[in-house]
Length: 192
Image (cartoon, rainbow, N blue to C red; front, side):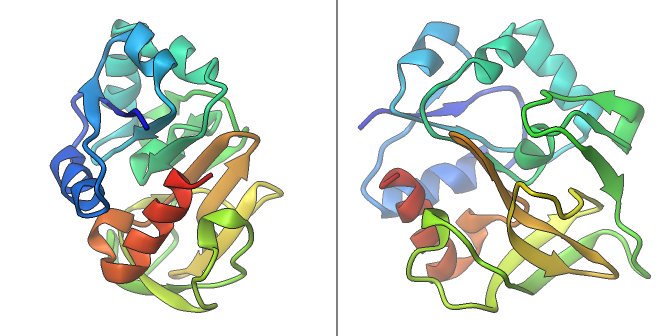
């Protein structure tokens, strides 16, 4: 299996690589459109700001490449948020795959950092994972609960912990930093 991690100067790429290595996968890190299109699976990692992340994708022509993918793609944290139409962060226009607006969390302390239970788990991404499993989050913005939501979490308010539309998946938490639960989710993604 060829798995490509999209290289667009976002953080957390190294920790995603290490987690995939633990699952026996040696991913390719690439910003090459042809290589991304030829992958069996694609991961869009992300730690950073929506505006600069979208600018980087656009400058490399990767925004249109990602929109056109037919194989399973997983957006992680900011990578999930970029699947939406727009973000309150930097007033950024995003990939518009899922629709919806990413909103700043309405919580007493921002960013939301730490372990949080995730509930209303649906779909193959969460196969074998018990309801109310704990996963690791680091974020200040969130995707509102919608028809695309396949898992929910709450921090000051409910938000989408995971989303899916067609072949596009997104997780707000960091599976690569979520211990055995996170590795199971990554394994489930690889088995889609």
